[in-house]
Every structure is written in structure tokens, then in C-alpha cells.
Amino acid sequence: MSNPVVAFVGRPNVGKSTIFNRVAGERISIVEDTPGVTRDRIYAHSEWLGQNFDIIDTGGIEISSEPLITQITEQAKIAIDEADVIVAIVSVQEGITDADEQVAQILYRSDKPVILAVNKVDNPEARAEIYDFYSLGLGDPVPVSGTHGIGTGDLLDKICQAFPDDTKNDEDDSIKFSFIGRPNVGKSSLVNAILGENRVIVSGIEGTTRDAIDTKFSTKNETEFTMIDTAGIRKRGKIYENTEKYSVLRAMRAIDRSDVVCVVLNAEEGIREQDKHVAGYAHEAGRGVIIVVNKWDALKKGNHSMQQFEAFVRDEFQYLSYAPIVFVSAKTHQRLSTIPQLVQRVYNNHKQRVSSSVLNDVLMDAIAHNPTPTENGKRLRIYYGTQVAVQPPTFVFFVNDPDLMHFSYERFLENQIRDAFDFTGTPLRIIERRRK
Image (cartoon, rainbow, N blue to C red; front, side):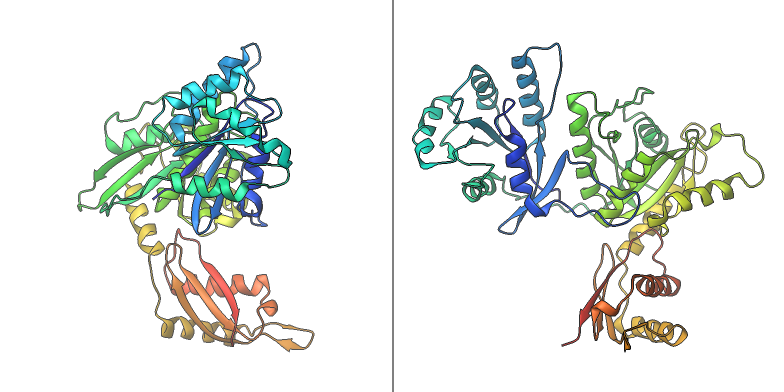
């Protein structure tokens, strides 16, 4: 189930981004120190008192040559469409403006919970002026200071109280997988080709798909799948339309709902830097990953074209060494039938659990073959290993000193585990803990 989404809306210069950063704080997802794993700052993950949620900043939307009111109106409408809770931000220093009233009218007619935050209340004298904002009709104003953090806790309390109750009992046991990638790599065409019918609008225009679209289907062996087509993820700085900012959020939410993510590449265009960024989202989320090279029919190929392209992909996506690669064509349906089969295999591997006794046999054999490293005369000792979670498979090694576990040796142990068990398509998480 996706996290609730909170959107911060308001006219320019009321402090939306400041409050956004304050709420995100240190909880913005840490990027791994691996090439290609990065994250745009269009949205962030946050947490308050055990409640996880996503936040989106509508600031920075600039449409030159259009009136301010039109810009604010469009911004508010997009936020209404995407968010579960909307935080309308105004400034106590400027008081109520026409733009504030325009936003309030739109939000007042929406069916989404709206919280009114009066920003820049930096001193007790300013608190007396917040009552003027009752006239906006958006409920009790919450005084905050994005700069100093005053009132942030009260605001977060109200946000969490406004989240819709998750009363749905989702009994959907289908395998959920999504297609992600740059615009115009053929994601929607793959969906249509797999389904054998045009369920999704397909276009050669970049960014045609706006929503994440779920489509259920079954294979001949009666395995049920839910296929999620997502909007193309456009490189930051090249998001020309307001709605494309939210296309990225939709894609991120689709990844959160997926068991397996298919990263789609365009064989004609090769690999761009943004392809690695897009794949980094799925890797960072810990989902099963398949690399799908589409439009393979369009290339002039020699005897070793596939091997050469695969080597190229492996070199560019070193952090996805576990991900299988499949070469397909949505146009000719080449190898399309292998995608559901591969998704099911990766899904099973993603849920695989290894018994502790067998795991420790593998660890002891690995240590015998390649002894643990030493540092300053002190040798790493691994006493015991156990699997503590699935999706992704997560292992805890109890050691004498976690600081002695060098990255290269951890990678060696991961490779030994992969050699012993089929974890194709799934990342592995390894955690070292000091034995008490």
C-alpha cells in the first residue's frame, strides 16, 4: 500500500519550500554511495510518530507570460488531484492576498482534507494576527515558522490526524510489476503488446502517459499479475509542464506498490545517464529488478550483438549486477512472453527464505575458502548468520566488531550466498551486528 501524500500549496514567497525542507528534515532518503543511484527533490519521504508519508513541494512552478492567478490556480488543482492531505500555506507578514483567496476557493470546493498553515510567525506578537485567516474558510489556522521550526510539531500532528483511514482489506494476491524508464522508451507499447490489446494510450510524444495505470491479467498457468504502466521519468531541469512533476511522484508510488520493477531501456538510443538514475529509484526501494531492453528489432545486429550490449549494460549498471536482462520488441512481440515468466521468478526469489543452518554452512565454507580480514592486528569473526526479512531478503551477521567488515568482504559473502541460492533479480541486504 502506498504512503499517504501531503502537498504544500500556496502563492510564491510564502515559504512552501522552507516548510517542505523542515518537515523532510533528516528523513529524506539517503542516496547510496554508488554511481547512478540518485533522487530528485520533487518529493521526499517523511515520518512523524511512526506514521510514514510522502510530501511534495509545489513551489518553483514558473510559467512566464501567464498571470499569477492562473499559475496559482493550476498549481492548486494539480495538488488536489495528487494529494491525500493538502497544506495551504499563507504568510502572516503579507496578510491575506487575492491569490490566497483564489487558492482557498479551489481548496474549499475540494473533497480533500485541507490544513491552513500561517507561516513566518516568528514571534509572539505575530500570533495575534493569525485570526484574520479564519476568513479564508479553511478551518483553524496553525501558526508556524518554517525558518525557526516553531509550530512544526503541531502542524505534523494535524497532518497525520487528517490522513484517510486505511480500512481496505486488500486481498489481491496477484504479482505486481511496473515499467519505469525515461519518456518514450516504449513502456506503454510493452503493456499493450503483452496484453494483446490497446488498454493504454500509446504515443511517440514524450510524456504522454500521465497516470500510473493498473491492468490485471492471467497467464496460461493461471498466475495472476497486475501490470502497472507509469509516466516517463524526465530528468530534473527538463520538466516543462506542471503535471510532469507529478508524473514522477506517480512513478515513485508505482514502485512502492510493485513487487518487481522492469527498467525499460531504448536499444536504439543506448544508455543515457538518466536511465541509471531511473533504475536507482527501484534499487534504492529494494524491489526486484529486471532490465528490459526494448526496440531490439530496430538494431542492425551481428553475431555477438546481444553479448556486447549486455556487457555494456553490466558496465553501466554495476549496482544492478543481480538484475536479469531481457531483449524484447514491443513492435514484433519478440521475447515478450518471457517477461511474465521472469517477473514470476524474480518475485519468488524476492520472497525466498533461507534456513539458518544452511546459511551458516555457506558462510563457514566461504570463510574457509577466503578467511576474514584483519585490521590493526584484529581479525573479523563471524559467529552466526540468519535471515531476518524478505522482500528484499535481509541477513544479519553477528560479529565481534562490525567496523572490521570491509565492503569488499561483505560483497564476497553476498556473492557466495548468491552462488548457493537463486536470488536472481533481487537485491540482498546484509547487516552486521555486534554479538552481545
